[in-house]
Amino acid sequence: MDIFGQTRGRLHRDYALITPDTHVTSPLVGWKNAMTTIHVSPEMGARFTQYTAHLQSNSRSSLPGKNMQRFIYVQEGSVQVQAESEHAIECGGFAFIPADVEHVILSSGPAKLLVFEKPYVPHEDFKEPPLVVGDSVNVPSEPFMGDEDARLQTLLPVSPEFDMAVNIFTYQPGAALPQVEMHVMEHGLLMLSGQGIYRLSNDYLPVIAGDVIWVASYCPQWFVAMGKTPASYIYYKDIHR
Image (cartoon, rainbow, N blue to C red; front, side, top):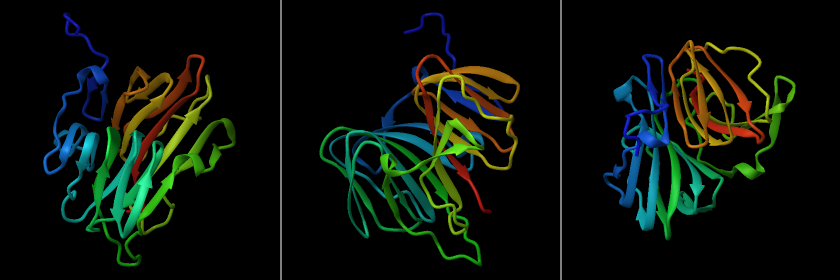
């Protein structure tokens, strides 16, 4: 409890830093034995939704709504995803479920999920994307723009039928993005480990594991890892449309 009402959390026209001390948890409507913290939503101007799903024993999900894609990343515990067939997903695993695909997420014990949901934007030249299930442990990391200390894992295929991407970025201490980025893509981001400084617009903000960041289109952004351990984050962006 902070009796002086202080927080690192920020809400800006072009970005938000949402820190764990500001989280408010509520029932996850339509789900069984699940609570949620909604971090990013259209109510703040975003074009997608990002939330944490806190699952208890015998949890069961509901569908996300018509034309809504869903991506889940297992932060703690394990879940079963029934979509086309049954998939066991452990901590560090993920699943992308295309829009309007019947599915259910089940948990026999406590689990925590990062969830991104986005309306699918079709393209007349491409078919709809397929179901994707994987484990981040098995996804190769590539040096980002030749920097061995800043490595990127691409969890979804970079293919034009996909209108969203989810990646994991890992930085060794002192590594940084090579430039301040300004681009059309929007981001939703969760710090998985470590700490650093994130530039958002003209503000330089300390960030640590557990922080959530929303970055609007064309908001200047940059990151440097600090401390003695690597820093990593998982992030969403809209692409190909």
